[in-house]
Image (cartoon, rainbow, N blue to C red; front, side):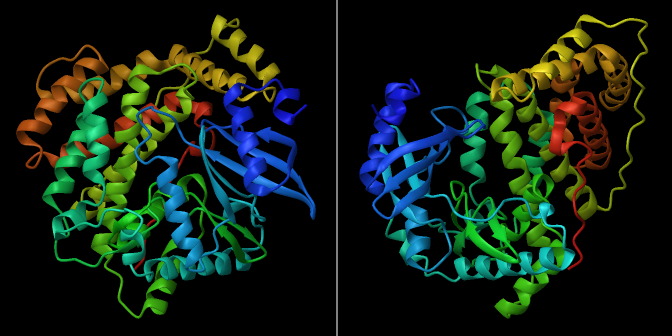
Length: 448
C-alpha cells in the first residue's frame, strides 16, 4: 500500500505522489501537508542512495489569486537553475494535479530569526548579490520560455499592474475609494524615463538562509521582465512579514556592485505599485469569502498593503500623516458569546490550520463587538466632513468617497491621503490579535 493510500488521501494526491516517485526515482515513505492556503507537501522519498527530502509546490487553484500558474513558475525556475542561481534542485513538473517537484532546500526562512546582527547584515548582502545576478541574465533566455517582454516605457513603468487590475475589476465587490485613488496616482506618476528591462523576481526578498549565506531563493510565481528597480521597491512589502534588516544598506550594496546609481523615486514608485497588488488581489476574495479562505489573513493583507502605498505617496507629496485616536474596548461584567467562542477555539489552537483560521475570525468578531461601532462612528464623522453630508455606514462612505476620487482626486489628494491612512489604521486595530505577524506593522524608511 502506498503512503497516499495509507493516509486516505484524495485521488489527486495519489496521482501526485506517484508522479513524485517517478520523477525522483524512489518511494514516498512519509510526509506532511504544509499548513497554509496553498496545496503543498513536504515529502520523504526513499531512494537507493537514501531518503531525499522533497517539496511539492502546488498551484493556488482557479481563484482570483491565480494570476500566474505554477507551470509558469517552473519554467522561470528552470532558466534560473540553468544560469547558476541557487534555486532548489528541480526534479520535474507534475501535470495532474499541477505542481513543482523540487528538493526541500536547507536553511530557514525569515531573516528576523537570525539573532546575530552581523550575520543578518551579510545575509542580506548575499541576497542582493544574487538579485543582481538574476538581473544580469540575458532576457532572451526568458523570451525562449514564453515570458512576455514590455515593449514601451509606459509598459516598463506599469510592470504587471494592468494584469492585477484586470482581476480586481472582474471581482470588485463594491466601491473601493483607496484603491481607485492609488491607481490614479500610479498612472499620473509613471517613471517613463526608464527603459531598462531585466528579469525581476517580482515578489522579491524570499529566500532560505543559514549562517550568513543564502541557501536558496524561492517563490517566483510573480516574476516578470521589467525594471530592476521594481525588485528593490518590492522589498519594502516583503520586509513587513519577513523583516530583512537594513534595506537602505542592502540597496546601497546592490548599487555598489552594479556600478549604477539607484533611482530612488522609481524605487518608491514601484513600492507603491507592488504594495497595491495585494489589495487588488485580495479585495475580490474578501468580498465573496469562499469556503476555506483564511479570511482574517486576507483582510490583514488588504489593510496593511493598502496603507503602504498611502504612506509612500504622502511622503513623496510632502503630506504629514497622523495616527487616529482609538476608543478602548468596552468593559464587560461577564463573558459574551464571542468571548466563549474565542476561548473554545484557543483551546483547540494548534490542532489544525482550519481551527486557527476560525479562531482568527472569532477574534475579529469579538473586537467588532467590543468597539467596532465606536470606531466606525469616529471614522464616519471624518468621512462625512470630506463629502459634505452625513454618512451612515462605511458602505455609504465607500460609495461617496469613490465619487470624490473620480471627480476631484488630484486637488484633494492631501485630505484623502490623511483620511485613508487613519482609516486603514482603524481597520487594522479592529482586526487586532488576528493580524498576527502584521499587527502594528511599520514600514522602513529608505535612506538612499
